[in-house]
Length: 88
Image 1 (cartoon, helix red, strand yellow):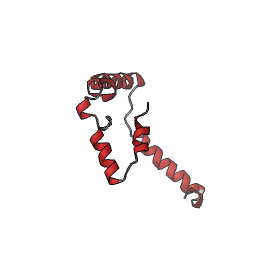
Image 2: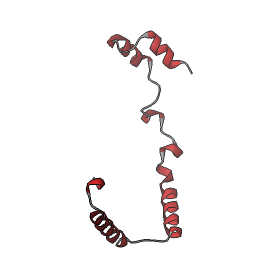
Image 3: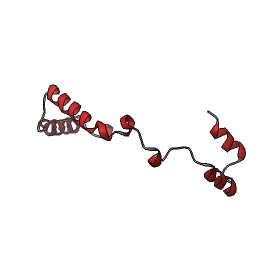
C-alpha cells in the first residue's frame, strides 16, 4: 500500500500519526514500573503457575483406564499408543 502513495501522502500520514501520539498521556518509567510491580504482586495469589492447580480441577491430569478403554472401543487409539503414552 505504501508503494502506491506519493511521498507527500506518506508525509501527511506520518504527521497525522504524530498528532495522535502527542495526545497520549505519558508517565515516567519509574512510576509505570512501580505500578506494574504492585499489580503483579497483588495478582500472584491467583496465578496458577505460582499456586498450582488442584488435582480435581486440572484438565491436563492423566486420564484413567476408563478413558483409555473408551478410546480403544471407538478405534481412536491402539494398545501400543496407550502404552507409549504412559512411558516416562
